[in-house]
Image (tube, rainbow, N blue to C red):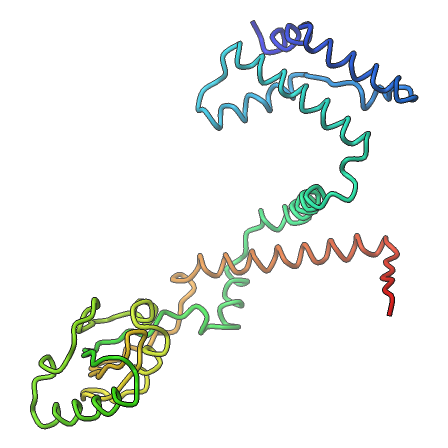
Length: 277
């Protein structure tokens, strides 16, 4: 049996006849003749094709004849309820409905920009405009010892510990345990910030190379640090950051398309904001 025959069979079911007849009776009782364009619910090959596509995407198989019957019956029920809701004006001043329609309008306005592909020249121009945004992170080689909470007493203790290290005391004998490594090799700034906080990374940038210094504050408290290397990021190349550039280019294109479409639509309306002073 073909989908056309299956759809025709379903439309002959008493349930479908009942829904259609009920819609007509409801309109007559409301004192208006039914609009055949609005009141005719057509289940054709295009509709069945959409139902089959959605089902197959979800279940990775075609529906059984009984499942297809259910899909078509649900479609008819959805259409009947939806059209009756519109007839009764239930969509008016409904924030959820308005937001959904707004999102659909935005999707229509930005569909072309969504499908567009930027050229290398466009991406290079975006990279040249803000190279720092796409540069790789600074890498740090350093060791740290944790001394305790950040407080006036803690800072005095840090100064004393730093003096002890300069006199030859083993730094490891002065630190307190915390659940992070004591040394890092080629540690990325974001990785370090995730462990210690942004202020700690800022402190690492200011410390001299090759000697114990500090104290540097983190989310844990105070640390003495020995920074042995800071590897500055190289100038970003298009091939290395293409995906990030494409993402930003497309986001900007979508925003511009939406703004342009909104200005075009708004030009057709007379907007008055009436507020009592």
